[in-house]
Amino acid sequence: MTTETQWEAHVQAATASSGMVAAKHRLAAQAGLEVLQAGGNAVDAAVATAFAVGVVEPPMSGVGGGGYMSIFLQETQQRVVVAFPMQAPQAATPDMWELVEGYDNELFGWRLVKDSANIHGYASIAIPGMVAGMAAALEQFGTIGLDRAIAPAIRLAEEGYGLSWFDTMWQAQDAATLNRYPATAAAFLNNGNPHRLPFANTPGPAGILRQPDLGVTLRAIADEGPAVLYGGAVGERIARFVQENGGILTAEDLAGYEATVQAPAALGTYRGVNVIGMKGGTGATTVMALLNILENFDVEGYGHNSADYLHTFIEASGQAFTDRLSYMADPTRVPVPLDGLLAKEYAGAMAQTIDLQQSQRQRKPGDPWQYQSGNGLPNAGGSLGSSTESTTHLATMDSAGNAVALTQTLLSAWGSRVVVPGTGVLLNNGMMWYNPEPGTSNSTEGGKKPLNNMCPIVLERDGRALAALGASGGRRIINTVAQLAINLVDFDMDIQAAISAPRIDCSTLEPILSVRIDPAVCAELRRRGHNVFVAEEAFLPRYFASPVAIQREGGALIGAADPYYPTSAAIGY
Image (cartoon, rainbow, N blue to C red; front, side):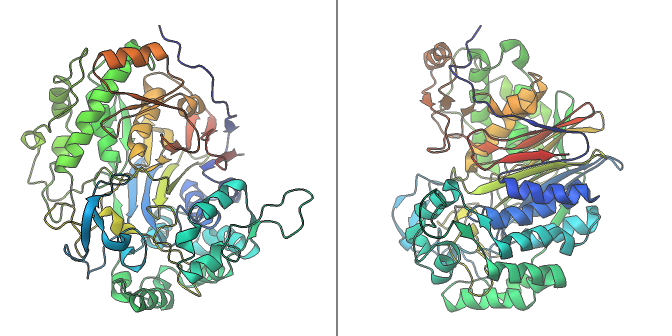
């Protein structure tokens, strides 16, 4: 018996019968809902929300980024992932970075690069995939045109939107680096400073952010399609500016980019529930590997956030992350035992190595190759990744039973910090995802797709979408999404309770536990050898990932938002 909370995190779930959108910003969710109300499906709404959130949450995503969309289509029973990640320009080489002494332990643990050239600036820019992905999703699975899907984003860019303290906090936090790039400072700052907020009785203009240049670019994409970026005038302007300032992105890189569709896209099952997500270079593979191990234990019988459950979760997560770092890589360059890592038999063997009373802090990788069919080359891999809060997630469901989970990113907050003059496009810093040292499986290489933590997943049971899940928060996304799935499947929680419940993060050697978990449980975990760190759940400092999600319960849709993320919202009708 445990006392799970010292206090509860309360937020009101949204309920609806016809359609639902959950996103990290209310205005973006509203944009998607407008599309649903006009007769669009869940894919249409997801694309509209994705473009809109890139306008109203600019540090996190946008035209200059990339991501993944997981889809379940009720009528055809299709399980699909649209992949549109960032990709290294062809001129990238393993020795392109000038290394300096030390390691960046705050992010990936890579060697430091001179002037942080792989983290911000022109050399950090990878090929963006967002527009290609959205166009591909609409063309194959949507019912409306790209012009209709982008319309709300155009309106928000041209007319502007009211800023909150949350928006100006992001501006203040990165003002020093944003001011290094004149077009970026002009787009997002007020004479080099964060925008004013419209406090009562305070003279001066209210905090409204308008992005007219971005509006022009979005109109060009709506009118001419993705070709205007991938081989057309906008792409040529972006590439020319990047190269003039020492970057390596070319117009040919953009023209050669393609989003891909993976189908069928079932990662596996967890206690009879299908898990739909990207089988490859995302966090979804590690989520599935973790769930496969836990399927060998009586999680429900242990009790939610009991010492037995959390001990088992920590151990299973430790094995999944160890295997992730040991085996996953770009399969076009390195063989990956992906089928073996996802095999139930392999998970069972790894479960046998878990001592229920003692932590094994220094875990060793298993041998998934003996469960692998083939040489592993057709698959993709993943990486530990950054804990930086720099990604956005959204989910949509419609009255026909379709469900979408979509995660997209610029990588770190504000990406490369580079806005291309005249376009309003803030470009990613996707080159930060590669190990800057030559000779590793994840070293920088032209045409290589980087390894990441994004894991939008759809849970499907008995041919119906149960939930659309995902989060922002770097490497901490993986444990968060796994716990949401467990809360729904093992503990039969509604989705808002699943999100609001106190969590644990095991993406590093020292597990982080919510301060709301029973202190006696923390003490017992320490007795079993876990060097746990207890942290308060808050927006900052951020120790846990930030999810939004939708659940279908009978005939009702339930939308859930992160109680610690001030702009997130779920809206339905």
